[in-house]
Image 1 (cartoon, rainbow, N blue to C red):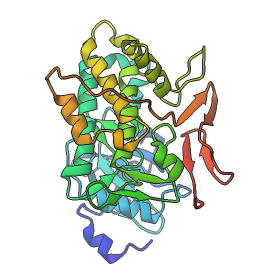
Image 2 (image 1 turned 30 degrees about the vertical axis):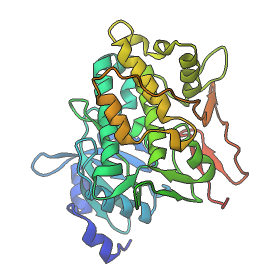
Image 3 (image 1 turned 90 degrees about the horizontal axis):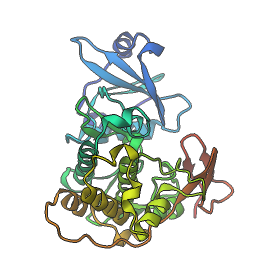
Length: 349
């Protein structure tokens, strides 16, 4: 694989030879395998000097090609924030495409909030701190970084946690740089994870910073409820988490959304405020959603001013028990992966 000279010059992190990476991961041994991301397996590597890094090895049959990988390397090397995962190196050659990240000992957030035992380690205060950290990371991407970046695949499994459970947004392979303040862009190739995609992006291919706000709202509701949006199942009626949250809100039962492990220790007013903010973020009309700047102010505010009242959210996707399905009206050529609930639309609209 040949990388354009301009792209190579833009990369501000070290290049690692494949031999060094093979030695650090014991030739990609299963013992060092941390898991599998959307584009390939991830390994733990121990490099000269004792430095530990996460090694993201792009699968040969992965949907992420040269363009996406170059995009991720160049983009993330320019981003520096405590709530974004740091790229420490890369290795790109004819046979292997590899990214090296800072090692996150606590892995991804979904391994905590959706796990019966691990969720006990996250009390209400810690979950709120995680939500605020994610919000600040997105605010940096949208407003404070040198580039205006839209993530396009924000979800709980793409939030990594360090030893102190400080959240860091990861996986920028699909991210896009946009110009201007309220910029909106469109694409005929919709890629991301169903259940986190905003309706305007999933159905029309339109994305903006408000698309990230929608995804953030889904993640927020998942963190405090301990339930997956696309995996949520109510025995009385088929619902996704967003519809369930809205139903409880309209019945003045927002506290019932709380993860049962938090009920005895949570700050009830804080939980209700968080549910309110989450519902504001997932409103159907992008214009009615707050900006991430607004979200951070609302989360960080100690005043008791009443929050805006949310309107009905968009219920983009839902899943029946053990059967992946979508409430989207998809064209015949569209495809959905049941494992990741990922939608890919390649044809024009």
